[in-house]
Image 1 (cartoon, helix red, strand yellow):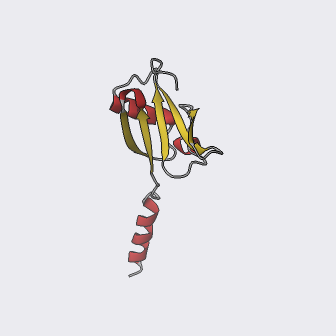
Image 2 (cartoon, rainbow, N blue to C red):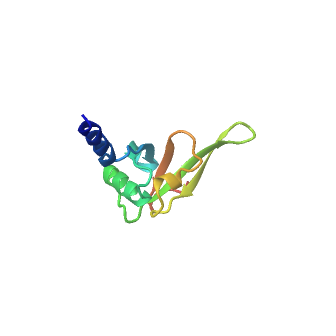
Image 3 (cartoon, helix red, strand yellow):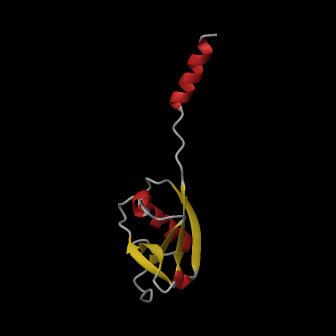
Length: 114
């Protein structure tokens, strides 16, 4: 009977700790495309951008990903601020301080000004 706890312990040690996934929203306004993606916090922004560009059929080589931060001004109107994401940073780093689901936007060189 002493063997059974050892087997259980070995099983627990070999199982990786579950990692929480983040659900993020990515949009490309000019083409009216929007999707939600599930990603691990340590995934690089470049990998997320590549997946979104494939999904939206956009050229990843020239695409840029922006974090959208919505705030409320003194008059109570909502304002959107856009922050360019570094392709080498992680999703977790990019969304530090964001409450709720993180919203991102893809921009292409030919897109109209924000």
